[in-house]
Every structure is written in C-alpha cells, then in structure tokens.
Amino acid sequence: MGKINWPRVILGGLIAGVVINIAEFLINGAILEQDWIAVMNALGIDIVGLENNVGTMVTFLIWGFIYGGIAVWLYAAIRPRYGPGPKTAVCAGVVVWLTGYLGPMVGYSAMGLWPMRLAIIASALGLVEAVVATVLGAWLYKEA
Image (cartoon, rainbow, N blue to C red; front, side):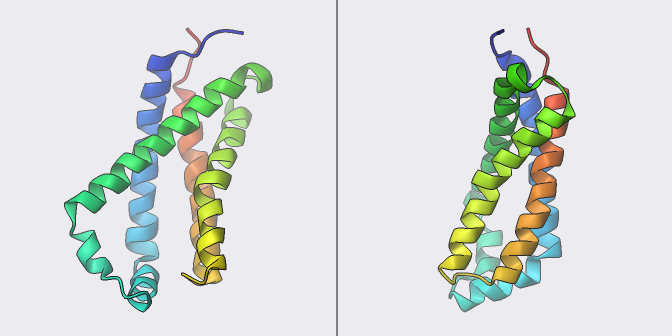
C-alpha cells in the first residue's frame, strides 16, 4: 500500500473545491435563493446582510475548499482497497455528502429551523455537487 500523494490531493482538492463553490453559488445563491431568504427571514436573520458580508462569503469559500480537500483525501485513502477510478470517487463523494451535507440538513430540519422540502431539495442537489466534485478532483489524483 503506497503513501498518499499529498501534492495531488491538494491539487485535486482545489479543483473539487472550485466545483463545490460554483455549485453552492448556483444552488443556494440562485436556484434556492428565495427559499433561503424566506426561511432566514422567518428566523429573524437578515440574509441579504449576510450575502453582503465579506467575512461570511470568505468563510463559505474556504469551507468549500475544505470539503473538496476532504473528498479527494478520502478518495486517496480508500483507493488502495476499492481500486482507482470513478466508482471509488463516487463512494468517497457519497460519504462526504452523508456527513457534510445530509447530516446537517436532517438535523436542522428536525429542529424545525427550515422546512423538510427545502432540506430534501438542497440535499439532493448537494449529492450531485459532492459526487461530481469528488470525481473531478479524484481524476487528478495519481499515486506517487
């Protein structure tokens, strides 16, 4: 079993992070924008103010790159057992989605912070996002 090729994990993670950040902008900033505004207004949060806050945007961007890095690292870690290729990348993407996307959505919906309908839509789109980002990032990963 070889060692993880960290430069390739970082490179793949950056690509996956770009995909995640673009998808998050499209999903939450365009497709579901009005839904999120309504939900946050109901919670007494001025989401328009948050959208214009540079610190909030930078945090979300960094978090997207962290998710991308974790996804490609996980791919590299399970690759020796499951083999290289898209099937293994999809498995890694699903794990990232389960823990980083679906888990929080279920929790916030269970607490009544936002409607289950919105959580289901955002989670389904997030699954596509996580898997596509992981497959693209993993495509750049090669063992040393």
